[in-house]
Image (cartoon, rainbow, N blue to C red; front, side, top):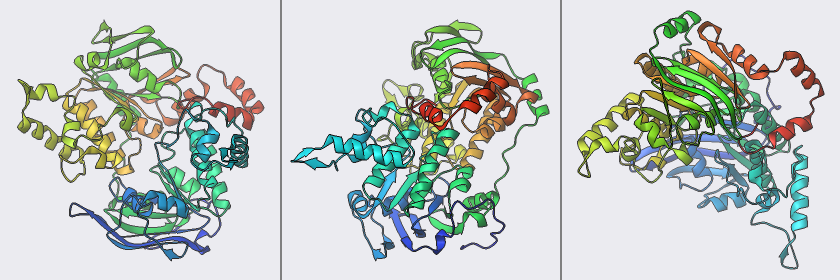
Length: 550
């Protein structure tokens, strides 16, 4: 432990005395600069064999840079790296993989149309008489997944399976290549609680087999459930190393931020009722929405000056409902009304023209344009208003960019740098700024804090409340109910593509939302009976749906 003041175990440790085991990795005094700006300054990281080690910090703290140096994607400017007791200097990711270091990113690097077995052994297929021995490939893949407790058809395309199972296939690929260390970078950000626990079961097995796991996550509960030790980074430096038991959540957050985190203000029931009482006219209403296969019967409405939370498990239809309301997907049944008038939204352009904005949950696939600058990404939606006779008013554009960089606290070297160089949290802030620059009347936010650290989450919650108080209508979807209750005046709960509950003001709480999600249209007695007959196989089957299923 390198920081004083750590005390009192927060929770039981997942394994015994990993710190007494031999160190597998030692990174000491690591430094690197980009364009003369230091990204890492004397950063340290040590990981033992047979432990799960948390690497945490705010967006931009240096976690990703540290990992890229370890895996050969970046060359360090100073410091040393020792792996298995010898000094190494990986010049390419391939060299790191060959040494036994495997990385699993948030966006899983699998080939969706190829089989599970092919993905596990891709490029390393066993051969017989010069030809790939497919029977052996499939047998070895099945045996490896069986050892994880996962029994699936390895001949099926991996894209057929849920995100959680794809994560486990990626872990199996790492094990099949004799990886001694696995780096998991935000691997749980798109998983629900059941999927997370299934994945954690596999991670614990890797640890118990003597492998080291570096686990990067912004979800504090996951860190305490899984990790043995933690390294905290801030502003390119290592500021603390400790066992998880020696640092409680408040200390962890305070250490990560370098300041006491002001509590996210949860509107009390009276405050919510007051907000509802002074809300404005109906901004948008969705009635009986349906689009096969994810949405069957969703109804909701949002008024000016209120924030409505859209709650439900992954696969419940939250994202699909927002896409229907934004004209991104065709509506098969039902209607959408804006300002009291029924409208037909044939495209996102129609929605934007009517004052709607949609912050997608998948910023990489549907949000950022990686090669464009921060400036161009931020002003993409409002560019038409800045253009006259085909010429962009650069001064007005820069004024908008400067305003939102300051107001949202976006960390960057220059507005001219490609947005792909920013951390995930700062990319998300740029996307939020993009929509706010268009001055919408209704803001649809789908998982706005996915992959963002706790400090940035508090910032986003504050921004959303301020937008609501300024008269904007906000519909926000989030997997973490604490985030919804922090900003929402009401909650609409959907399950299996249907609206099952609406909780207003004083009725809304995390427990009430969970009850609605759990019981929905079923009676508690029916669910209790179903729970008694459930088995691991049932859960496994449920997880084998498509990648967005539950």
